Length: 185
Image 1 (cartoon, one colour):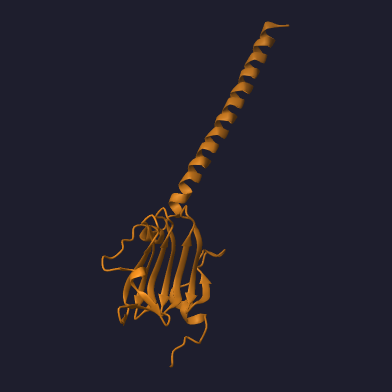
Image 2 (image 1 turned 45 degrees about the vertical axis):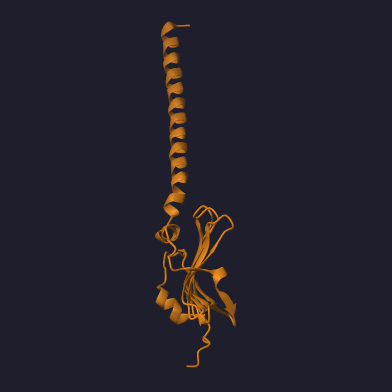
């Protein structure tokens, strides 16, 4: 065998090994980048709504639900229908639920947390019925549901559609839902 021919084979083998090392390095780099992207996904999912509920503070004048009495589907503080914030705690003392009431009926925000303090739900009520945006999160912060309700009736999803449109809240309220709102108009 000619020494020159063996030298050519050595160079070809070195190039092949270099190519394999480059390919392996490129694959590891892609795996690293993909892993970083997966780790950052939950952080990106924490919307302003989620963070607002996570950082929400109970007003000092809020009453424990156990201090109020329920009668005729209304909450009372003494002899008067209650208006203000109510709250409930987990047995360990962590905040479980906070809700707004007006004239004894749920009216305004209703917030729910997991025992570890992460937000579980944010809903709006009007005169005792779910009305408005209704958000729910898994314990890791990912959205379970994001929808609008109109007087207790499903109106629309607020999750991004395939054509990337989102409807305005007012448009949803006017368009869908039961026409019987229980008023004497």
